[in-house]
Length: 215
Image (cartoon, rainbow, N blue to C red; front, side):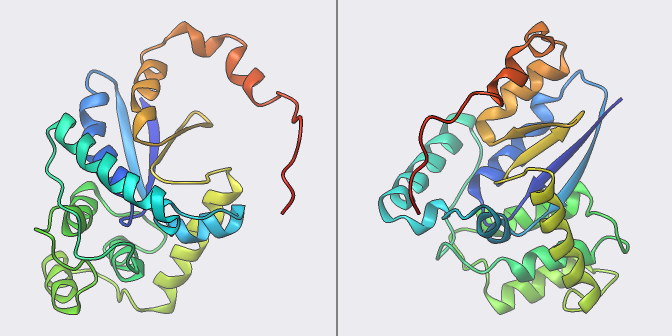
């Protein structure tokens, strides 16, 4: 049985779409998926990157593309009232629903992601909506506790240390598959595509750098 780790932040529409599509891509494969919430902003800061929503024309394109992708994949998606928003309350809530040091189950992750992207254009960070969601999920721990906050920080730091630079990312057998559009590649790997046994995977990481852009 393959052990997969799905790393996500609820702020990412691509993470929502990948989460919804992943079961279809894994049909027929013996697997177990662990869902790990992280703070995307922390990963971006670690690698010195800006998020798509921080670059005005890229922000516009991102929203158009994800709505098109949802249309193509026949998945419901409604942009929240504002984006980006602060996802910390939702991420901490997800971890509070898991035992100490654990990860939230698929149902909890589904509720959180759909709260943002399936919410009829409502504000994902609205206090009343967050309270109603918390009541429905009934977390065993306090989302505002130092323990939960530290777990989110540690999960984000650990993800960066493993080489993760964005979400969604699926890890399996020490390999990283990033983005919604990597799910077909992931499926091919899990189904034994011989390409992954060849030299190309490792060769891609050894290509020399010709020039570096000045900061």
